[in-house]
Amino acid sequence: MTTWITICDTCKRDDWDPETQPQTDGEILAGLIEPIARGAGVETRRVSCMMGCVRACNVAIQADKKLAYVLGTFTPSEDDAKAIVDYAVLHQDSKTGQVPYGQWPKGVKGHFSTRMSPIPDLG
Image (tube, rainbow, N blue to C red; front, side, top):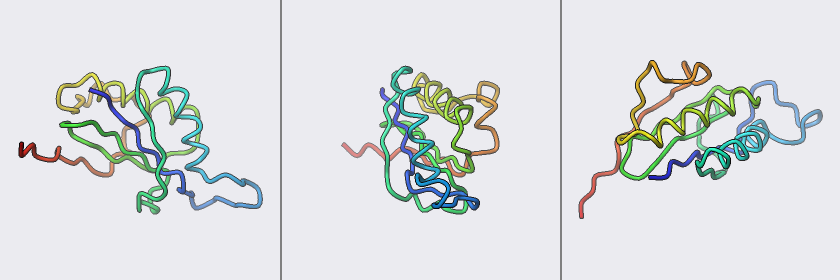
């Protein structure tokens, strides 16, 4: 089952300055995540505003019938992008979406905002 990384492309960290950095922090992070995810077999999509501005940069890790996670307070860096994708791969490989803490990439520890149960299958 395919895992998706949803990336907020309007996220701006507190020190963002449009005069010196024309792209938002979210756009930069998305641009770093996308090629790594493509190579790892994880899908990505950009959305405008995940309403987590206080914890910019925000991403969601989601898949059908699995636990979903929202993470934030990243920097638009290659290290953070790789950690996000590495976690998404573990999520994809997990039957339920839950990844044991000991397997979490160091770069995602401390970045989790929420965990959501899958939507019930009423069919």
